[in-house]
Length: 315
Image (cartoon, rainbow, N blue to C red; front, side):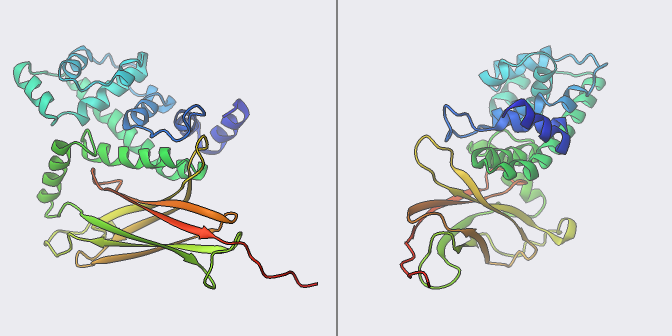
């Protein structure tokens, strides 16, 4: 992204989101590379708004950093940060890894006591990080960067629950316990994907087609839980990934929010329209991810064929 583009984005959405856009854009050398949660947390830690928090607070992060390192919870990527971004990253990771098994063991052997001003700063940094990720959820899909979009969604679930991983069994089990405390079940989903023309029997170049995704809630059943704001029990995003040739970044071609307001609902029927690409064989991946529950991350591939329109032009 050149300086002029960065300036234009900054003027439209502000310096924080412009910084995030620059930090999360695809790497030309590895356009299909997965964007890690660490990359996302490094990015939000470096935002100008984050650096402005607690300028006059002399937070004692040495003990935090020591505990993170000894427990193996500080990644090499974060360890390379310096100055205020490093401080913000350390404070975020401190909250995310509090219940990590190796951190629990470390804190049992060497308890860490923080000053009140450091605790207050941690809360401010995590709140700012949560806010930035919510804004990034709306911004990043506009660039059609699928890997960055997925990473922002996954990271949002982690910071919302103060957990460290969407894949680690101990982290997912902790998420299950958090939900059980709210009388909710850990979501278990299955996907079915069908791609078909909007009209007719064949998908034609430049014509409208639809991706139909049926999401089955295998965990259905009323648990007596209280609904959240606007009567919502569960919330997901459906993201559609268009697969491109090697050397080209895959693209986000569709996004749709999904909510569950009835715990007895078994199937969510989703439909996203798109303009068909040129004639040929193509692949899409449908992703269903929760931005509020860690570990809810499902995907399914689907292939389709676009055929040449052989109807002669009228003269």
